[in-house]
Length: 441
Image 1 (cartoon, rainbow, N blue to C red):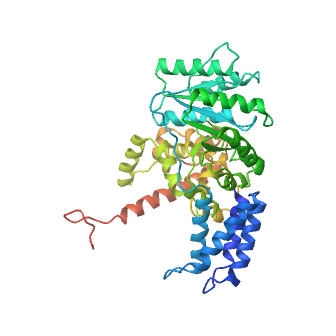
Image 2 (image 1 turned 60 degrees about the vertical axis):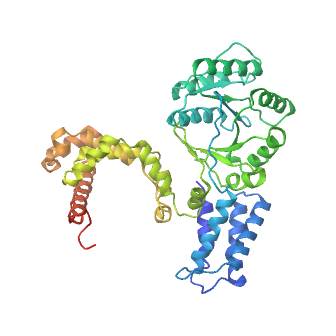
Image 3 (image 1 turned 90 degrees about the vertical axis):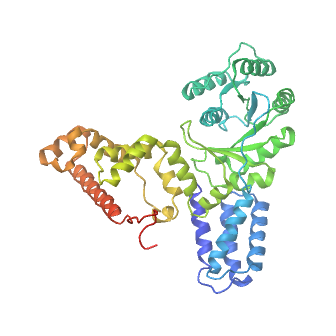
């Protein structure tokens, strides 16, 4: 996500490292490079111009704190302005006082509305909400069927009716949600290949009748400024409440993300990426700014780990580590939990500095699958005591997992190094004195 923009902004910021003081003379070149990087990322021209102007004004008027280099100061200012450009603060979903809270999902055809509706349902379920889905797209023959497939995969009920009147469908869906105790109705609306009056009139009527707590415009981030222009056209007629950036795992240059808040005045509420229904994130401007500047996003990474972690297994592993007991079974458990967190390239991008260190390297998703296959081909005794795995056993494990003896040797060598690290960590753990404070404090 934003790989080219990240690289070019980093290059522009590196040009000022080593200077003693920020001046108009030495800041012009990095700002010119930064402006070009934004325009090449398909950021709106006016937005890019205003952004560079704000950075320059703050940089020239800033007092550099002691022990902070001018380069670090500029990075801080750029991060601040990027955060502001992206919306400043996180904008959580609103919740109505009387259930069901109606959320209308709008946008052009093909932007990812239906998939996002299912993802939003999954997200709300994790927040202990009880959503129900409904489609008012009576124009596309497969629209309702597509939502039913998504709902079935997500384990979320989908309202069905024989009516072909969007207003009637919406009214019946609200009635069902209210009677059966669903607190949120997610309404997947009709899209078009282009904006037309008929489409907008229908959405306006639905809005007036339903009085939704949220109207979320789904913008296809791969279309750049086209998505921003569509958002502006929808806003003129519908006045939606928030933006969703879809397909952020695709070839997105960043133009839509960096322009849509400034152009529409509406906050980005979610980022939708990946094919799985769990691939949805609330949008945090400061975290996204950190990712764009190559600083990673350790907070989101920790949240993903906490969300996917199995508490009992984690507690059991902690106890075993304290006793220097770490087996291939434990290693496999941790591997499976990492895989649940999402694609490795996305996780790596959240680790500060990792993106730069691994530039040009391919993250091999299949490597984890091979390791899992190798460990699963071992007996329980072999997993718990790898030292018994001799030559004949290695050949058997390799044959059973579809790998080579060299792969088995590599895995066992890496595992032995991990066991050694665990032992060293425990030996360095500070001893305690009465009162609970480590010795020496």
